[in-house]
Amino acid sequence: MTHPLLLPMICNMEQNTIENRLHQHGLRATLPRTIIMDTLSQSVGHYTIESLWRTVKATVPSIELSTVYRVVQAFVEVGLASEMHLPDGSRVIEATVKAHAHWVCQRCHAIEHITDDVMHGVHHMLKASVTSRDIQGVQITAWGLCQSCQSATK
Ligand SMILES: [Zn+2]
Ligand SMILES: [Zn+2]
Image (cartoon, protein in one colour):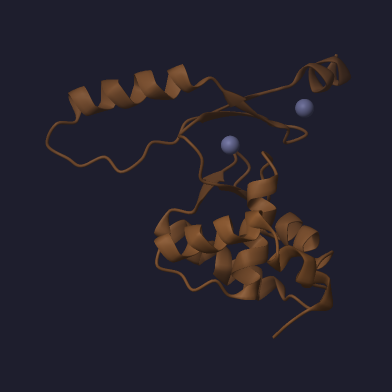
């Protein structure tokens, strides 16, 4: 399966890096996987499955939501992507970078990263107190209202 829009990408260094990352995690570099990883890697942002789908559709109009869902699921399983749950229950995806804590606005869903030190400190505290169990990961999400939502509710 080839898509004319993708040809320039194939000659691109970035593309090789993405393929290597997929291979290193035991995934064959299929077209949907490559494009979805490329999209996730290009942005420091956070996507819901639907917003990721809409973004990827700009490059591959025929891609199905269910494909995006399956690919993301595979990425999360091998650790290429992380998911977090917002206070309202929606699920947000991002490419796995260094562990970081999130702050989420409960109203407009703006997401910000909290400094690495917070995560580092909590991870150490947990390791020290949870000695009998394995810890594979830690998620921290703080929430509240951003400044513009605060002034909107005044
Ligand atoms: Zn807000
Ligand atoms: Zn994040």
